[in-house]
Length: 93
Length: 332
Image 1 (cartoon, chains in turn brown, cyan):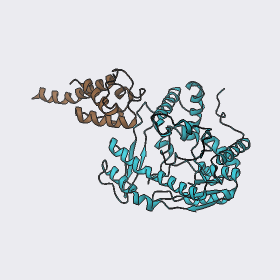
Image 2 (cartoon, chains in turn blue, purple):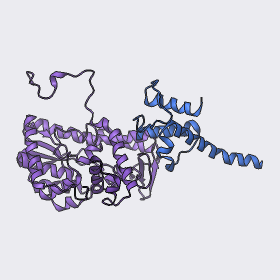
Image 3 (cartoon, each protein chain N blue to C red):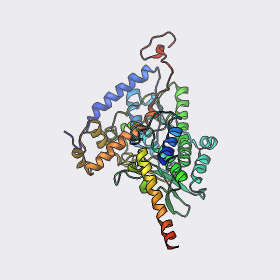
């Protein structure tokens, strides 16, 4: 499943009781009342465990976490950052 | 026109208006007096004084309800207020009830999920990072202090956060149970003590300090509560005391736990937001930039959304129309 698909699935299962209601990829999860501050904590735990990334304190802003599109872009950025040192080591090897 | 004096009220007139409202409400509830918790803080002090004015000093019972984590001066200040107003007040130490309910054990269990070494001699508080420096999500953090006075702040998992808050909520709920015990035995009504900022922003525990039969200062900004406090001659020591939550083992201000700003500036922002005053017009009066005021406005709306649940009455499948207000059904 794609990154945004996994994120959509997590949100649907944990905050919408498995509903088929469509979440627009740019819909504000906060403004639509889909997640609140506690939900954001759960979301962060999910992202760290599911995608093996670290979410720092400075990452806890709406521009990273307030829509499926934003979360997807954030995960891809964090994954790429993690990959850079590994690529560098491989290049040296 | 917005100014920093928009919250100035006629304290004498407002006191008379609230006293009349209290009399009418307590009569409508068919109760004989009022019970309230006295924390030594400004809100409960003012509510006690208003109830005494409205109903008579001998018709008001104050309760001091300390527990393990209460600040040392709360009881002394509470006694000072009761004496100044002339109402009866009794001590109900809720620590045994909290122990029995597992409040402290469950709190420590929650904290050890993120700070495994937390235990006897440690202290803690919850804080929320400031929104003034940057846009941020309202994610609470935990500050702990070791017996050696070393402090650090950590992020909480959702599970740890929810359990810590749930365990801590026992304090407000057991206090409210105690208030209702005395209200039931005296046939009194329970007075709630939230001010407008707390009531609006959901700064209370559902069925804890959020429960009451009447709430005489819920319409007043905290700044206005202080004006009434001066008029009602609440002791100066209480009027000068900085607002505190008095909930966790470490001292904690209300703004580091919940509100974006100290109350005086928060009140002005709330008033301005309620009256659609543009952020740029407010900024200079609260020592913030227009962008910061906009963040405060968004934070106000975010907290209203998040705490709508706290105000909600039980949801029914269909209304029981016979119980609507003004019903004169037999036996009611």
